Image (tube, rainbow, N blue to C red; front, side, top):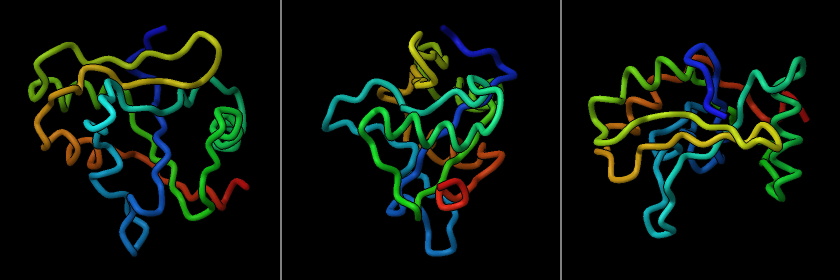
Length: 134
């Protein structure tokens, strides 16, 4: 299911992807080329009616990923992201959620210019600490 432009995408950012002052770094939005990653993984914020961040942390754990208490959750608006990065990408940019839950991918970044990671970082509208919800 594709996400609406008004919806939000939340990306978990490991402590190593954050600066000492807690700001999320560009590398949190880099595809792992060595693993032939085709989409940027995250979660659909509106999938949950309440306690969105807490539920996203629980969803990460159900996917066998234990988020660090020092990690961050970065929230981005889907429509804004598409508008900002579309011109730097050769294909269609879209967010698609798995039918079985909140897990969402940002597609169309494969082979994109490295400036995209900076634009994604600048598109963060809210950043929260995992420790605030565990």
